[in-house]
Image 1 (spheres, helix red, strand yellow):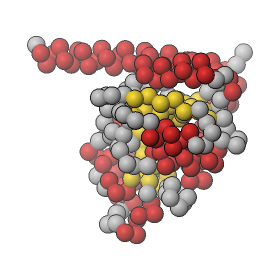
Image 2: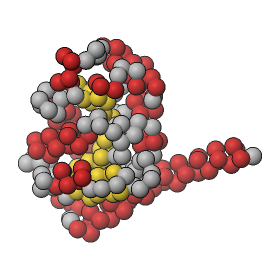
Image 3: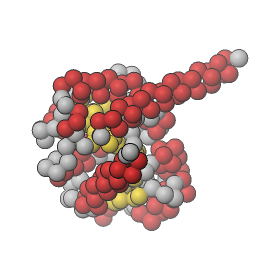
Amino acid sequence: MHQTFDAALGINLLHVNQDGADQNRTQFDQWGIRCLNLMSSPGAGKTALLEQTLAALTPEIKIAVIEGDMTTELDADRLRRYGVPVIAINTGRSCHLDSKMVAGGIHRLAHEHNPAEFDLVLVENVGNLVCPAEFEVGEHAKVALLSITEGEDKPLKYPLMFQEADCLLITKMDLAPHLDFDLEQLVANVRQMNPRADILPVSAKTGAGLEHWFGWVRSHLHQSVNSALAIAP
């Protein structure tokens, strides 16, 4: 009975979270904002990637950030240096953002700024390879990061993260000459889980591959605008 109750409780929590995520996405759509959810294990380089992204794209794309962390605003402060709104959410003991937390971030963003001014909200989720993939937050696409220091087997050991990803960034490629790392094997492992995701090797330190990432973001926004025009009355 206890196991049945736990399973039912978990399913119910996911349903409630999904309802909230749908509401968040509807709110973003009403404002004409696209949302990307960035997920990875701790240390894979999400914040470093966001720093490079903000530096490169903010002149042309109006971006806000929702920054999730269990404690502190250290990463949020790093991103604020780029002159964009950063809404920090501390999750406490929770290992992921959920739709209710992000709804609170959306409310703060709308209270402090005019949402119509923004094109894109980037959500930096809490560092974890499991929970963030289970809880949608209202994003239009999921972006997973995997550092080459984590090994080629992670897509097989943590499949949901990679099954859910629309784009996978293989990060810290500058370290490849110093590691026993097989990029082809990693890609093959990802393809077992997800044949459709775009896979982009990058280095936030050297800038290698980042133009492909920036192009992916631009393409996502362009496709979203075309879709909105297609369904407009």
